[in-house]
Length: 424
Image (cartoon, rainbow, N blue to C red; front, side, top):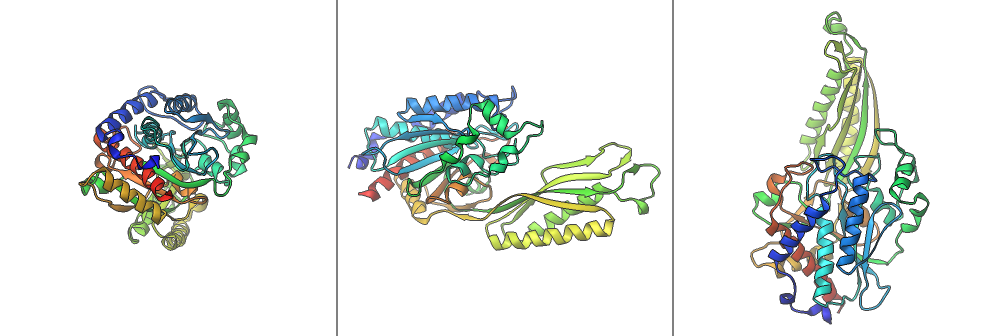
Protein backbone atom coordinates (compact mmCIF):
# COMPACT_ATOMS: atom_id res chain seq x y z
CA UNK A 1 0.00 0.00 0.00
CA UNK A 2 1.29 3.48 -0.82
CA UNK A 3 0.51 4.61 2.71
CA UNK A 4 3.38 2.47 3.98
CA UNK A 5 6.01 4.60 2.24
CA UNK A 6 9.00 5.26 4.52
CA UNK A 7 8.88 8.34 6.69
CA UNK A 8 12.05 9.59 5.00
CA UNK A 9 9.91 10.61 2.02
CA UNK A 10 8.02 13.08 4.20
CA UNK A 11 9.02 16.67 5.07
CA UNK A 12 11.17 17.07 8.17
CA UNK A 13 9.96 18.69 11.36
CA UNK A 14 12.06 21.77 10.57
CA UNK A 15 10.60 22.14 7.08
CA UNK A 16 7.03 21.67 8.32
CA UNK A 17 7.55 24.25 11.07
CA UNK A 18 8.95 26.80 8.63
CA UNK A 19 6.10 26.20 6.21
CA UNK A 20 3.56 26.54 9.00
CA UNK A 21 4.90 29.89 10.19
CA UNK A 22 5.05 31.22 6.64
CA UNK A 23 1.43 30.16 6.06
CA UNK A 24 0.31 31.68 9.36
CA UNK A 25 1.92 34.98 8.37
CA UNK A 26 -0.18 34.91 5.21
CA UNK A 27 -3.43 33.96 6.92
CA UNK A 28 -3.09 36.41 9.77
CA UNK A 29 -2.84 39.44 7.49
CA UNK A 30 -6.63 39.48 7.50
CA UNK A 31 -8.06 41.38 10.45
CA UNK A 32 -11.01 43.63 11.23
CA UNK A 33 -8.82 45.90 13.40
CA UNK A 34 -5.51 47.25 12.04
CA UNK A 35 -2.67 46.52 14.41
CA UNK A 36 -4.58 43.72 16.10
CA UNK A 37 -5.75 40.25 15.10
CA UNK A 38 -9.53 40.45 15.27
CA UNK A 39 -11.38 38.22 12.82
CA UNK A 40 -15.02 37.79 13.78
CA UNK A 41 -17.45 35.38 12.19
CA UNK A 42 -18.89 36.69 8.88
CA UNK A 43 -16.84 39.89 8.99
CA UNK A 44 -14.96 41.23 5.96
CA UNK A 45 -11.72 39.85 7.41
CA UNK A 46 -13.33 36.44 7.81
CA UNK A 47 -14.32 36.46 4.15
CA UNK A 48 -10.78 37.41 3.12
CA UNK A 49 -9.30 34.70 5.33
CA UNK A 50 -11.75 32.16 3.93
CA UNK A 51 -10.74 33.02 0.37
CA UNK A 52 -7.06 32.75 1.30
CA UNK A 53 -7.66 29.38 2.96
CA UNK A 54 -9.59 28.06 -0.03
CA UNK A 55 -6.72 29.02 -2.33
CA UNK A 56 -4.15 27.47 0.01
CA UNK A 57 -6.12 24.22 0.01
CA UNK A 58 -6.28 24.19 -3.77
CA UNK A 59 -2.53 24.74 -4.05
CA UNK A 60 -2.04 21.64 -1.90
CA UNK A 61 -4.22 19.48 -4.14
CA UNK A 62 -7.56 19.73 -2.36
CA UNK A 63 -10.84 20.48 -4.09
CA UNK A 64 -12.19 23.33 -1.98
CA UNK A 65 -15.23 25.56 -1.51
CA UNK A 66 -16.73 27.97 1.03
CA UNK A 67 -19.91 26.39 2.33
CA UNK A 68 -23.34 27.81 3.12
CA UNK A 69 -22.49 28.52 6.77
CA UNK A 70 -19.13 30.16 6.07
CA UNK A 71 -16.69 27.30 6.64
CA UNK A 72 -14.03 26.37 4.09
CA UNK A 73 -14.10 22.71 3.09
CA UNK A 74 -11.39 20.89 1.13
CA UNK A 75 -11.24 17.25 0.01
CA UNK A 76 -8.67 14.91 -1.52
CA UNK A 77 -10.07 11.62 -2.74
CA UNK A 78 -8.56 8.33 -1.65
CA UNK A 79 -7.85 5.15 -3.63
CA UNK A 80 -11.25 5.56 -5.26
CA UNK A 81 -13.80 8.41 -5.33
CA UNK A 82 -16.46 8.68 -2.65
CA UNK A 83 -14.72 6.86 0.20
CA UNK A 84 -15.44 7.89 3.79
CA UNK A 85 -13.05 10.60 4.98
CA UNK A 86 -10.65 11.37 7.77
CA UNK A 87 -11.27 15.05 8.54
CA UNK A 88 -8.63 17.42 9.88
CA UNK A 89 -10.08 20.73 11.03
CA UNK A 90 -9.97 23.74 13.31
CA UNK A 91 -11.18 27.35 13.03
CA UNK A 92 -10.07 30.67 11.53
CA UNK A 93 -12.23 33.07 13.55
CA UNK A 94 -10.59 34.78 16.52
CA UNK A 95 -11.50 36.63 19.68
CA UNK A 96 -11.04 40.39 19.68
CA UNK A 97 -7.33 41.24 19.72
CA UNK A 98 -6.49 37.54 19.73
CA UNK A 99 -3.44 35.41 19.09
CA UNK A 100 -1.84 34.10 15.89
CA UNK A 101 -2.09 30.39 16.59
CA UNK A 102 -5.45 29.65 18.23
CA UNK A 103 -7.41 27.71 15.60
CA UNK A 104 -5.29 28.97 12.72
CA UNK A 105 -2.49 26.50 13.48
CA UNK A 106 -4.85 23.53 13.19
CA UNK A 107 -6.15 24.66 9.80
CA UNK A 108 -2.65 25.26 8.45
CA UNK A 109 -1.57 21.86 9.83
CA UNK A 110 -4.30 20.10 7.88
CA UNK A 111 -3.40 21.91 4.66
CA UNK A 112 0.29 21.06 5.04
CA UNK A 113 -0.48 17.40 5.75
CA UNK A 114 -2.53 17.25 2.55
CA UNK A 115 0.35 18.80 0.59
CA UNK A 116 2.93 16.45 2.09
CA UNK A 117 0.87 13.40 1.16
CA UNK A 118 0.41 14.67 -2.39
CA UNK A 119 4.10 15.47 -2.82
CA UNK A 120 5.10 12.02 -1.52
CA UNK A 121 2.68 10.34 -3.92
CA UNK A 122 0.80 8.66 -1.08
CA UNK A 123 -2.69 7.43 -1.93
CA UNK A 124 -4.79 6.80 1.15
CA UNK A 125 -7.43 4.10 1.58
CA UNK A 126 -9.86 6.86 2.60
CA UNK A 127 -10.53 10.43 1.56
CA UNK A 128 -8.82 13.27 3.37
CA UNK A 129 -10.75 16.42 4.23
CA UNK A 130 -9.52 19.68 5.69
CA UNK A 131 -12.04 22.15 7.12
CA UNK A 132 -11.65 25.71 8.43
CA UNK A 133 -14.64 26.43 10.64
CA UNK A 134 -15.79 30.04 10.91
CA UNK A 135 -17.69 30.26 14.21
CA UNK A 136 -15.85 28.59 17.07
CA UNK A 137 -15.13 31.51 19.38
CA UNK A 138 -18.79 32.63 19.79
CA UNK A 139 -17.68 36.26 20.02
CA UNK A 140 -19.96 38.07 17.59
CA UNK A 141 -23.27 36.18 17.87
CA UNK A 142 -24.79 34.14 20.78
CA UNK A 143 -24.28 30.80 19.04
CA UNK A 144 -22.42 27.66 20.10
CA UNK A 145 -19.97 26.06 17.64
CA UNK A 146 -22.50 26.79 14.92
CA UNK A 147 -20.42 26.00 11.84
CA UNK A 148 -19.33 22.57 13.04
CA UNK A 149 -22.88 21.98 14.29
CA UNK A 150 -24.03 22.44 10.69
CA UNK A 151 -21.92 19.45 9.65
CA UNK A 152 -23.42 17.16 12.28
CA UNK A 153 -27.03 18.21 11.63
CA UNK A 154 -27.26 20.14 14.90
CA UNK A 155 -27.57 23.71 13.65
CA UNK A 156 -30.18 25.63 15.68
CA UNK A 157 -32.34 27.68 13.25
CA UNK A 158 -32.90 30.24 16.03
CA UNK A 159 -29.26 31.28 15.64
CA UNK A 160 -30.12 32.85 12.31
CA UNK A 161 -32.34 35.40 14.06
CA UNK A 162 -29.79 36.32 16.75
CA UNK A 163 -28.09 39.71 16.71
CA UNK A 164 -24.60 40.99 17.39
CA UNK A 165 -23.79 43.98 19.61
CA UNK A 166 -24.47 46.39 16.73
CA UNK A 167 -27.89 44.85 16.07
CA UNK A 168 -26.91 42.98 12.90
CA UNK A 169 -28.96 39.83 12.39
CA UNK A 170 -26.88 36.71 11.76
CA UNK A 171 -29.05 35.75 8.80
CA UNK A 172 -28.31 39.10 7.12
CA UNK A 173 -24.62 38.89 7.94
CA UNK A 174 -24.44 35.42 6.43
CA UNK A 175 -26.08 36.58 3.20
CA UNK A 176 -23.72 39.56 3.07
CA UNK A 177 -20.78 37.20 3.56
CA UNK A 178 -21.90 35.14 0.59
CA UNK A 179 -23.43 32.28 2.56
CA UNK A 180 -26.86 30.72 2.24
CA UNK A 181 -29.12 30.35 5.29
CA UNK A 182 -31.42 28.02 3.35
CA UNK A 183 -28.49 25.78 2.46
CA UNK A 184 -27.24 25.07 5.99
CA UNK A 185 -29.41 22.01 6.57
CA UNK A 186 -27.91 20.32 3.49
CA UNK A 187 -24.41 20.53 5.02
CA UNK A 188 -25.21 17.73 7.49
CA UNK A 189 -22.99 14.73 6.81
CA UNK A 190 -24.50 11.32 6.17
CA UNK A 191 -23.87 8.60 8.74
CA UNK A 192 -20.67 6.74 7.94
CA UNK A 193 -19.28 9.44 5.65
CA UNK A 194 -16.59 10.36 8.20
CA UNK A 195 -14.18 7.79 9.60
CA UNK A 196 -12.45 10.10 12.06
CA UNK A 197 -11.94 13.71 13.09
CA UNK A 198 -8.52 15.07 14.09
CA UNK A 199 -7.72 18.54 15.42
CA UNK A 200 -4.38 20.13 16.28
CA UNK A 201 -4.58 23.07 18.70
CA UNK A 202 -2.33 25.02 21.03
CA UNK A 203 -2.92 23.87 24.60
CA UNK A 204 -4.10 27.28 25.86
CA UNK A 205 -2.72 26.23 29.22
CA UNK A 206 0.68 25.82 30.93
CA UNK A 207 0.86 22.05 31.55
CA UNK A 208 2.94 21.02 28.53
CA UNK A 209 5.41 23.87 28.98
CA UNK A 210 5.82 23.13 32.69
CA UNK A 211 6.45 19.45 31.92
CA UNK A 212 8.72 20.26 28.95
CA UNK A 213 6.55 18.36 26.48
CA UNK A 214 6.06 19.59 22.92
CA UNK A 215 2.72 17.87 22.38
CA UNK A 216 0.03 16.07 24.34
CA UNK A 217 -2.97 13.88 23.60
CA UNK A 218 -6.36 15.16 24.76
CA UNK A 219 -8.36 12.64 26.77
CA UNK A 220 -11.60 14.60 27.04
CA UNK A 221 -13.03 18.09 26.60
CA UNK A 222 -14.55 19.55 29.74
CA UNK A 223 -18.24 20.09 30.29
CA UNK A 224 -19.12 23.78 30.39
CA UNK A 225 -22.03 26.10 30.96
CA UNK A 226 -22.46 29.83 30.36
CA UNK A 227 -25.18 32.19 31.54
CA UNK A 228 -26.01 35.88 31.60
CA UNK A 229 -26.85 37.26 35.02
CA UNK A 230 -28.74 40.49 35.74
CA UNK A 231 -28.87 41.99 39.20
CA UNK A 232 -31.42 44.78 39.73
CA UNK A 233 -31.16 47.13 42.70
CA UNK A 234 -31.95 50.83 43.17
CA UNK A 235 -29.86 53.66 41.76
CA UNK A 236 -29.17 56.53 44.14
CA UNK A 237 -26.86 59.43 44.90
CA UNK A 238 -23.46 58.21 46.08
CA UNK A 239 -23.29 60.98 48.69
CA UNK A 240 -26.79 60.87 50.15
CA UNK A 241 -28.03 57.27 50.36
CA UNK A 242 -26.97 55.73 53.71
CA UNK A 243 -25.09 52.43 53.47
CA UNK A 244 -27.75 50.50 55.40
CA UNK A 245 -30.49 51.66 53.03
CA UNK A 246 -28.73 50.87 49.78
CA UNK A 247 -29.72 48.21 47.28
CA UNK A 248 -26.40 48.31 45.47
CA UNK A 249 -26.51 46.05 42.44
CA UNK A 250 -22.74 46.14 41.98
CA UNK A 251 -21.77 45.00 45.47
CA UNK A 252 -24.38 42.24 45.23
CA UNK A 253 -23.00 41.16 41.87
CA UNK A 254 -19.45 41.27 43.24
CA UNK A 255 -20.57 39.04 46.10
CA UNK A 256 -21.94 36.59 43.53
CA UNK A 257 -18.69 36.66 41.55
CA UNK A 258 -16.76 35.72 44.68
CA UNK A 259 -19.28 32.98 45.40
CA UNK A 260 -18.68 31.54 41.93
CA UNK A 261 -14.93 31.57 42.59
CA UNK A 262 -15.43 29.74 45.89
CA UNK A 263 -17.72 27.11 44.36
CA UNK A 264 -15.31 26.38 41.51
CA UNK A 265 -12.33 26.14 43.86
CA UNK A 266 -14.19 23.50 45.86
CA UNK A 267 -14.23 21.00 42.97
CA UNK A 268 -11.16 19.26 41.56
CA UNK A 269 -10.16 20.54 38.09
CA UNK A 270 -13.25 22.81 37.95
CA UNK A 271 -13.03 26.49 37.00
CA UNK A 272 -15.41 29.44 37.14
CA UNK A 273 -15.09 32.85 35.50
CA UNK A 274 -16.94 36.17 35.38
CA UNK A 275 -15.83 37.50 32.01
CA UNK A 276 -18.16 40.48 31.46
CA UNK A 277 -19.24 42.90 34.20
CA UNK A 278 -21.30 45.98 33.26
CA UNK A 279 -22.75 48.31 35.93
CA UNK A 280 -25.58 50.66 35.04
CA UNK A 281 -25.38 53.65 34.93
CA UNK A 282 -21.64 53.31 35.54
CA UNK A 283 -21.13 56.81 36.95
CA UNK A 284 -18.70 57.71 39.75
CA UNK A 285 -21.35 59.45 41.86
CA UNK A 286 -24.25 57.01 41.43
CA UNK A 287 -25.01 53.84 43.38
CA UNK A 288 -25.36 51.23 40.59
CA UNK A 289 -28.98 50.37 39.95
CA UNK A 290 -28.26 47.29 37.84
CA UNK A 291 -25.40 45.06 36.77
CA UNK A 292 -25.17 42.61 33.90
CA UNK A 293 -22.46 39.97 34.03
CA UNK A 294 -21.62 36.60 32.54
CA UNK A 295 -20.62 33.38 34.24
CA UNK A 296 -18.67 30.52 32.68
CA UNK A 297 -17.99 27.34 34.65
CA UNK A 298 -16.41 24.07 33.57
CA UNK A 299 -15.46 20.61 34.80
CA UNK A 300 -14.17 17.33 33.33
CA UNK A 301 -17.25 15.60 34.80
CA UNK A 302 -20.90 16.20 33.92
CA UNK A 303 -21.91 15.35 37.49
CA UNK A 304 -19.61 18.02 38.88
CA UNK A 305 -20.96 20.62 36.49
CA UNK A 306 -24.52 19.82 37.57
CA UNK A 307 -23.53 20.15 41.22
CA UNK A 308 -21.86 23.49 40.54
CA UNK A 309 -24.91 24.69 38.62
CA UNK A 310 -27.17 23.97 41.57
CA UNK A 311 -24.79 25.55 44.08
CA UNK A 312 -24.41 28.70 41.96
CA UNK A 313 -28.18 29.15 41.70
CA UNK A 314 -28.65 28.65 45.44
CA UNK A 315 -25.85 31.00 46.47
CA UNK A 316 -26.80 33.72 43.99
CA UNK A 317 -30.43 33.71 45.11
CA UNK A 318 -29.38 33.75 48.76
CA UNK A 319 -27.16 36.78 48.13
CA UNK A 320 -29.94 38.54 46.21
CA UNK A 321 -32.45 37.96 49.01
CA UNK A 322 -30.02 39.09 51.72
CA UNK A 323 -29.12 42.27 49.83
CA UNK A 324 -32.66 43.06 48.66
CA UNK A 325 -31.96 42.99 44.93
CA UNK A 326 -33.61 41.28 41.98
CA UNK A 327 -31.90 38.46 40.11
CA UNK A 328 -32.31 36.70 36.77
CA UNK A 329 -30.00 33.95 35.49
CA UNK A 330 -30.35 33.17 31.79
CA UNK A 331 -28.30 30.21 30.51
CA UNK A 332 -27.26 30.51 26.85
CA UNK A 333 -24.74 27.74 26.28
CA UNK A 334 -24.09 24.29 27.71
CA UNK A 335 -21.90 21.42 26.55
CA UNK A 336 -21.46 18.03 28.14
CA UNK A 337 -18.03 16.54 28.76
CA UNK A 338 -16.79 14.89 25.57
CA UNK A 339 -14.35 11.96 25.81
CA UNK A 340 -11.96 11.58 22.90
CA UNK A 341 -11.93 8.22 21.07
CA UNK A 342 -9.41 5.85 22.62
CA UNK A 343 -8.38 4.20 19.30
CA UNK A 344 -7.56 7.63 17.89
CA UNK A 345 -5.62 8.52 21.03
CA UNK A 346 -3.56 5.39 20.40
CA UNK A 347 -3.06 6.39 16.76
CA UNK A 348 -1.78 9.79 17.92
CA UNK A 349 0.54 8.01 20.35
CA UNK A 350 1.91 5.96 17.44
CA UNK A 351 2.36 9.15 15.44
CA UNK A 352 4.26 10.72 18.31
CA UNK A 353 6.53 7.68 18.60
CA UNK A 354 7.35 7.80 14.88
CA UNK A 355 8.06 11.53 15.03
CA UNK A 356 10.73 11.43 17.73
CA UNK A 357 12.10 9.06 20.35
CA UNK A 358 12.44 11.96 22.78
CA UNK A 359 8.71 12.70 22.67
CA UNK A 360 6.21 11.20 25.10
CA UNK A 361 2.51 10.63 24.63
CA UNK A 362 1.45 12.86 27.53
CA UNK A 363 -2.32 12.77 28.06
CA UNK A 364 -4.38 15.60 29.50
CA UNK A 365 -7.93 16.99 29.44
CA UNK A 366 -8.97 20.16 27.63
CA UNK A 367 -10.47 22.89 29.74
CA UNK A 368 -11.47 24.85 26.63
CA UNK A 369 -14.22 23.94 24.21
CA UNK A 370 -13.40 23.01 20.62
CA UNK A 371 -15.16 21.96 17.44
CA UNK A 372 -14.05 18.40 18.27
CA UNK A 373 -16.85 18.39 20.86
CA UNK A 374 -19.38 18.78 18.09
CA UNK A 375 -17.77 16.41 15.61
CA UNK A 376 -17.62 13.66 18.23
CA UNK A 377 -21.39 13.37 17.86
CA UNK A 378 -21.05 11.73 14.45
CA UNK A 379 -17.58 10.16 14.30
CA UNK A 380 -14.62 9.16 16.48
CA UNK A 381 -12.69 12.32 17.35
CA UNK A 382 -9.32 13.20 18.82
CA UNK A 383 -7.16 16.24 19.54
CA UNK A 384 -3.44 16.90 19.72
CA UNK A 385 -2.35 19.76 21.96
CA UNK A 386 0.81 21.75 21.24
CA UNK A 387 2.88 23.60 23.82
CA UNK A 388 2.41 27.38 23.91
CA UNK A 389 4.43 29.96 25.79
CA UNK A 390 3.28 30.41 29.41
CA UNK A 391 -0.06 28.87 28.40
CA UNK A 392 -1.21 32.29 27.17
CA UNK A 393 -4.01 32.34 24.60
CA UNK A 394 -6.74 34.70 23.38
CA UNK A 395 -4.10 37.42 23.55
CA UNK A 396 -1.54 39.13 21.31
CA UNK A 397 1.04 37.56 23.65
CA UNK A 398 0.08 34.10 22.42
CA UNK A 399 3.28 32.42 21.22
CA UNK A 400 4.89 29.11 20.32
CA UNK A 401 8.03 27.91 18.56
CA UNK A 402 8.44 26.98 14.94
CA UNK A 403 9.96 23.69 16.11
CA UNK A 404 6.88 22.74 18.12
CA UNK A 405 4.63 23.58 15.19
CA UNK A 406 6.71 21.29 12.99
CA UNK A 407 6.59 18.48 15.56
CA UNK A 408 2.80 18.73 15.82
CA UNK A 409 2.28 18.67 12.06
CA UNK A 410 4.64 15.72 11.61
CA UNK A 411 2.74 13.87 14.38
CA UNK A 412 -0.51 14.61 12.56
CA UNK A 413 0.96 13.35 9.29
CA UNK A 414 2.25 10.17 10.91
CA UNK A 415 -1.13 9.67 12.59
CA UNK A 416 -2.95 9.82 9.24
CA UNK A 417 -0.51 7.21 7.92
CA UNK A 418 -1.09 5.08 11.00
CA UNK A 419 -4.83 5.13 10.31
CA UNK A 420 -4.07 4.12 6.73
CA UNK A 421 -1.94 1.21 7.93
CA UNK A 422 -4.80 0.02 10.09
CA UNK A 423 -6.98 -0.14 6.98
CA UNK A 424 -4.57 -2.67 5.51
